[in-house]
Length: 168
Image (tube, rainbow, N blue to C red; front, side):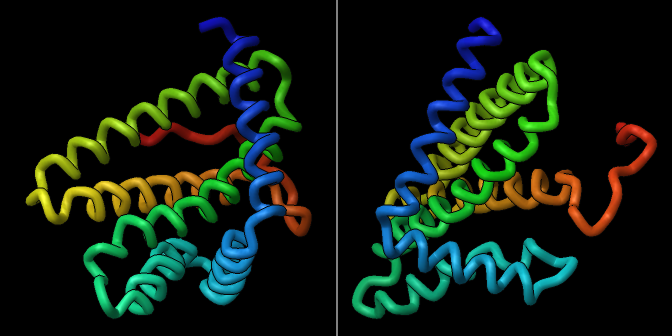
């Protein structure tokens, strides 16, 4: 896939997601819950993973197991919104070559998550597969959104002078 095509795909996806959020009161509400949780969590943003889904499943007292997948997908949509916003902000400061590499990296990551979570779901009993796969995707998307948000320069602090180090 050409670099330009990859960038166009990510840009078109990024343009659609914010429009969806504006039209969905549930997504706006879920984003507000996540924002509040992230503000309160301080240096432990991963503590917010599940903040929407757990409440959603508890509210579905008639069939909590049946609600697991839908609730996880609901929260995933909110985290994906944050992920898309972080990708857009990250892309603004990059040159064309770096944006192309970021787009390729993101597409590879999306493929990895799809395969990983499909495999994980398939290893579960049939009644649990959909919920466990959706939960896996939620955790992965949330983790990626948190990772990218931490990497973004903050207005209150300066960018580090040295490049990031690769730790193996």
